[in-house]
Length: 567
Image 1: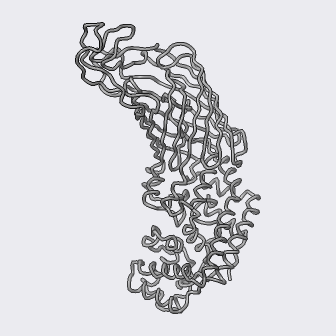
Image 2 (image 1 turned 180 degrees about the vertical axis):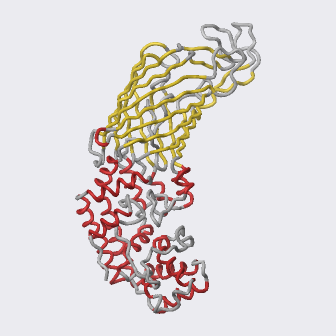
Image 3 (image 1 turned 90 degrees about the vertical axis):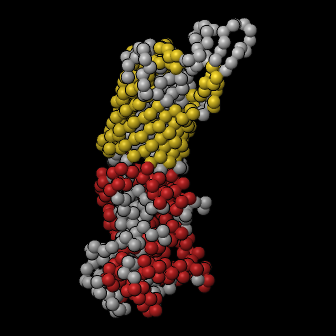
């Protein structure tokens, strides 16, 4: 009988960074000597038939299933005697398989919901995430764009303005392409580290994972539409009005933003973060206590499996060998094992034992929260450079559309906080009207922000202080589009064809902001800011304004698609 020890758990943690919330529990992967005399895992076997199977038990036991199928295909295993070791790897009664059973049953017990909640709590301590609208939105609390984004889905509501003249209410939806892909395909949407059970491909790692998209909607600013009219509304003027501007709604898409994270050491899926995790595990004496708690949880599951799980008897073993011989793809073997697994769960005589076992598995999963401090320490140790490229298409109300390009650089100083710098330029979009007195360049921007967590990162409610400065230079004053059907400013003359006017002044716009962000458990963030500017985009003169918002991280939505929602 193999007994799991705390030391074995620590060894496994070195191999499975982030195991406190990954699809792989923090226990040592059992080592078996196969019929070929090699240690299991050394051989290159085909796992394609099982690694992405929708059944959690097939994914959990995939390596053992693939090993058996490979040996049957090459005639290394032909009977119960020389296939005993491989078949033992599929026996629920075998204590070596405790961790695989925990992985399998965890999904069936809907504990992915708990994992998603844990992901939210851990993500709250990240100082790099951009969750709200950018600084040029009419309703925003952000003066500087951060290098990171939401891991799955984030929805933010912000009220205020920092560089705009008119305060607004803005809704911003952020999403990560990799997590959306995993959520839609059911390919472990909660998985954030690369393990043998969760292996992202090159396209996911280098294209989907670093790419984030956000949409910003102005909720409180009305849009308008020009419609044909005839006659006069009153007899005060003989002028005929042929067009009128009418409101079309209070909600309008004001911008789309695409972000590509070139480098982000806060991303748990990155090689840099995994190296930090290994170092933290090796150097942390505090993990020994957490490992002991995990040991007790998994040991209880192991003991219950030994007393209640049905052994893989000779009939079942022969049946699996026959399936493997008849279908060399492995699909028939997987179906046979699934039937054996489900027979244990559904057997009436084991209903009580299964309920107790389910509770033990849930308890073992909960012990994983003991790694919260280890995660926070690793996150803090992820000091270094973060770099992101951002492109935005903006269409502000009654102003020309623009294309904004921004480079975001950040450096994390571990316990001293993080500095973020933005360098950006904006170009007017579309055709420049004939006779326009402005060129293609809208403005250039340089900004910086300092962020530091005031409360402990391992607390359920955290506070983050942000101090930011912003400089924008415009070669020409801002352009205001006056819709057709309105009157020229300061007159009663209608403008049937619409017009453009310069508003405000060219030159430098300076903005300073101080902000406190309250980070509650479950992914809720409440930013509260105050800002000063020497002018705004349309108006001259100093302005002092307040910004307030709320955002929610919808990472737990993954549970709805993976069978963990609603529990």
